[in-house]
Image 1 (cartoon, rainbow, N blue to C red):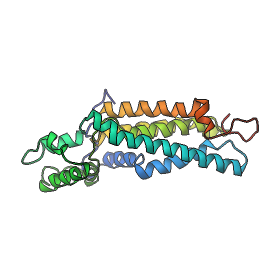
Image 2 (image 1 turned 180 degrees about the vertical axis):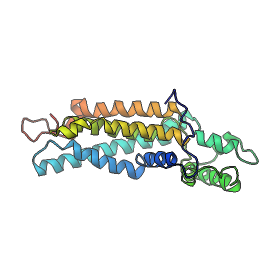
Image 3 (image 1 turned 90 degrees about the vertical axis):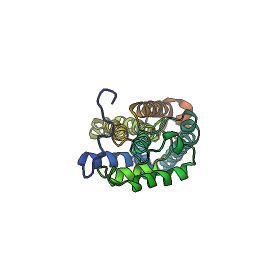
Image 4 (image 1 turned 90 degrees about the horizontal axis):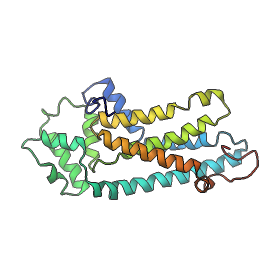
Length: 241
C-alpha cells in the first residue's frame, strides 16, 4: 500500500475496479460488518458438537464482539478522530476542486451533519469538475464527513478476519483449514479499497489494520477475554481448544 499509488485509482465512472473497491468498502461498513460478524461467530463455534452449546457460544461471541466493535467505533469517530484531526483525502480533493475555492479548514468548523450538506452542495454546484467520478463514490464522500485517522473500516475488517481465520484454521475440515488466509485477503482488499476510493491514506488504513489485528489477537488468546465467550472446561463441547 505504501509502495504502490492506490490513492483515487477506483473513482472513475463505470470502472470495474471502482465497483469492486466500492463493494469491498461496503463489506466492512455498517451492514457488511454485521454480516461478517455473524459469519465469524458461526465459524467460531464450528468445533462444538452440541447444538445448544453452539447457539450459546454464538450468541455470546456475537454480543461481545458486537459490543467491542460498536464501542471502539464510537470512540474512534467521536474522540480519536476529532482529537487528531487529520482531514480525509476526499475532503481535500473536493475543496481543491470547488469553485469558488473553499478552504479545507472552513468545512471542519461546522458540525458533521452540516458538513455532509456542505460537501453535497459543493459537488452538485459544479457537476462538470466531478463528472468523471462515479456517483457511488461521490455519495460515499458526502456521507463520510468525519476526520480520517485511523480507518474504522480497516479496523473492523482485520479484527473480524483474525477471528474468522483463527476459526477456520482450527476447524476439523481440511478444506476450511486450507482457506484460513482468505479472510485476511478480504481484510487487505478492504484496506486497499479505502485508499483507492480516496476515503483514507495508507497511514490511516495501516494503523486501523494493526489495531484490528492487535484487538483480534487479544480477543482470541487472553484467557479472560476468551472466558467471556466459552467456558474453560474439559468437555468435548468446549470451543476451539
